Length: 112
Image (cartoon, rainbow, N blue to C red):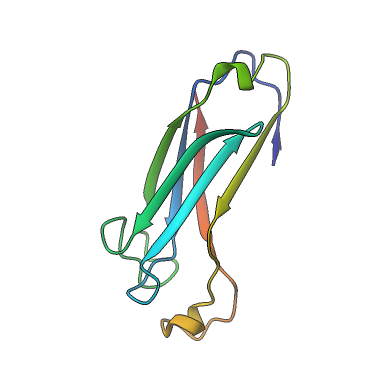
């Protein structure tokens, strides 16, 4: 996603996500880049990162990272990319009869 140009360089980022973790799918990697520069690379694990048995139970994981300020010069737009190593359908994990393909739900993104 492309965001408006910041008034000053970005030095850190916080990403609040709702992972889709179950006993049958206990691990999920989430990464975030800012203008192509790595900022977050985290592995979320069931149950330590929040044992989400189905989407919407409210379990959140706060991921934080540092951004090289040279990656976000003032006055230039910011491109953010959020990736996960897997997508699942709840039906395939025997959690719900839901055929949607889910990764992580982004609740909040903060730059400092």
